Length: 256
Image (cartoon, rainbow, N blue to C red):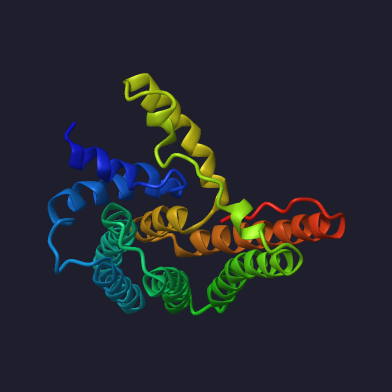
């Protein structure tokens, strides 16, 4: 393994989401190997490209039809690979920017709303039933609540403790399975099995898998039920947890 490969591997975050961790992020690493040293290819331009591809996939979903759904499923993955690439490239180059970080997170939130909103519309167009639109709205609202809980908690904690953010950024090795357990097959297998529990977080990495599977199978309503219920359960559980921790002055853990 050469130095460039090692440096790129270190740019893959340990906290990658479920599908990102062992599918889209590794693909992003391979592509980054060939483009990361091209100066005009920048993290911000990759973020913008990811967002444009996400919009194109949403347009295809709204248009309906088997072929459009299949192409949309592919483009959703392309968008997510690009979304992984921008962060990897910024860490590799040590070229972090506040605006880049902001646009990356903002477009991620918008993409989820676009994807599930378009699925809700497509399911409505198929069935002429308003339920899919309602489920999409519920899922999007509760997914947004998850982020709102996180930032409200940070605001309250930093109001009381000026060093709270420093405590949150405890450094962990980006590739835990490599640095602690080695690079062998068994180490990889242990890491891979451990990663599977992240599917229960139902975050953007899981959405990419869910969306593509639902579109390929043309099972939009079941997809929306899973999305709405999972987001409501996780968001309301977080509300209860964070409220309890704040009320009893316990250390609050900020989750994705």
